Length: 212
Image (cartoon, rainbow, N blue to C red; front, side, top):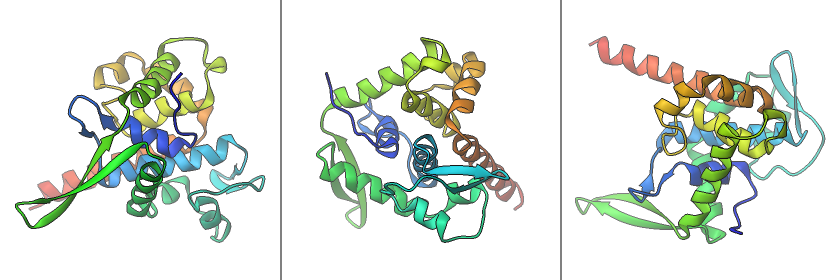
């Protein structure tokens, strides 16, 4: 049996990796939104976050590996979307470094045109990604939703929200739309918040592109 990372953000980072092209399939802010939503979802599923008036609130005290719970505790009530958008770049770096320390990935820095540094991610054992993909695929097509592993259900919900084609090609998102909605409803509000944030970002980019 292949061991996989315990944390949901780490799993989503690896699921965003394209094994065929041997590079990250998603990067930048969009990956950051998915990882922030994954951290929020993990806290919600474990009872460390609750919800009041459609906003996350601290729940049962516990571990806070990415500092997200501390941010929410120290802030006035804000929307799920606010917390999905916050500190996305730092989140990507934190999860990447966690995976590198754990030996899951290797990070190599190269210079584009000999000038601009660019980080390349290499997954050390492709079986880890395949195992995570298998769990998500089983959640999408297998047993009743109530019996699906909560992290596998969350992986599908977050992959759909973040449009991770490495997990869910567009055809699968359309074919299994109802199942994805059921899995998303089971995993809490953060995945839907990420979907809305990404949709808003795309609309803003389209308006900026057409406004010149």
